[in-house]
Length: 309
Image (tube, rainbow, N blue to C red):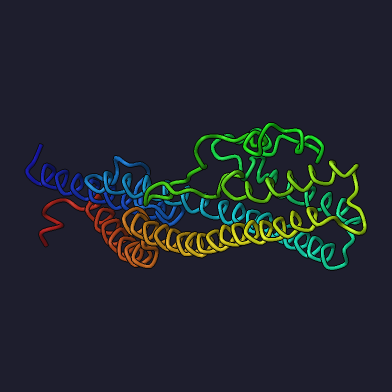
């Protein structure tokens, strides 16, 4: 083998290797355009893989918390409606009681009492996504376990009508656990206690209060009106606390959404291909590839002596 043939073979091999490298680079750049990712898998990211995995884990946790905050917003809306309805029921009954005293006629109070009981029971047995809102950690049972005024009046105590967990339901959105709604007993004991006693008073009069009322009945009704006013204030206070929590959760949901967007950008900057940069590199690599191909074609036809000329 002559020096010319050996040298020509060397240049041919070098040109072929350059062609192969350019082809591989073009293929990878075209893959990046198609997938919009810098690498096929985490191994391809080298030392950046750990950061990408960490960011993806944080994104998943943040998105889960953001969805929990959105769902909690719906629950708090339902809580607001329930507490507002119970407060309205207490006020409507209070006005009926005062009207009965003023008119010296208690004959319509049984009807007003029934309406108030139905509204209060419905409010505190409200569910959201299959969970009893006011049952605390016990989500499967209705917190108010009496179905009628008669059962309420016959209960051994007002406390016995509540079927709820010892602790309120809590949620943690990343900053520590907090209660999401009061238990039924915390918000409505005063209301149901007054309903119970008023029912017992009416039952003691044979099922309907008379007209005119006795002095003892008037005194009792005035006390019930005051108790209903206090029960309403308790409910309104709980509703106000719920409203404050609603605003906090709305702000938290927005913050979590912004955090997720920021983390997604960080992960994307590390993992996603810059398509404008890739397009520029493709153009440059194609020019380089064509130059190498032309050189290779020329070398394959020349001897070393021809090439040296």
